[in-house]
Length: 205
Image 1 (tube, one colour):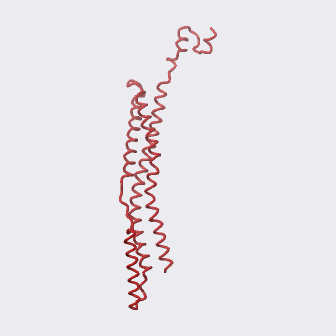
Image 2 (tube, one colour):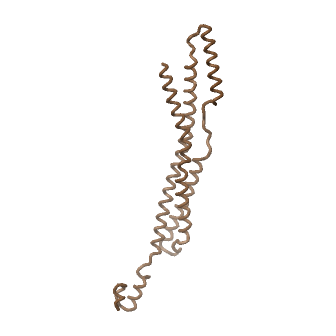
Image 3 (cartoon, one colour):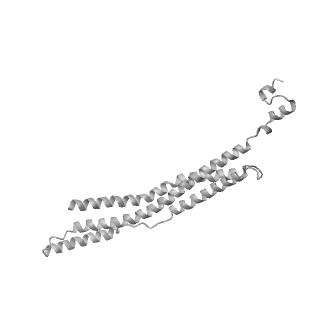
């Protein structure tokens, strides 16, 4: 019986500490999001200056990718801010209160034994009280951490969507500025001389 009480109290204490430590994990993930989103914003601002012309074929696609990237970045920032929004954690009783409670239990146990009641065990009562407080606090803190984890997951997915759309947009812009065959200098030479448009053949003339 005593070993069971001790075991459940230690198990609930471990769960309680793990849920409290989860709050620190949120702040450890912030540098990754900060670096990724900073790269996203810098890439977006650089790409805006080199978008295809409004009359170009790829203009609607570029605008759609730019809108998706911007929207995903804003979404990631919003859910990330929500995940670190201050939340009230539940804790067990303060140390002075626990000390006073334990001292009171010792007094009650001494009085009970003096009155001939040997069934009162201060240690048992304290163990079950701590187990109850650990269980209540762990359940409340777990709900807070689960909500934060969901928000952080959505922020991560939005960040990935932003990265993918930004990379696609950058590739589209690069391909747009690659000169076509009609715009290459060797093509103009070939069209004027009637010779093949290969620079390797023209230099021998």
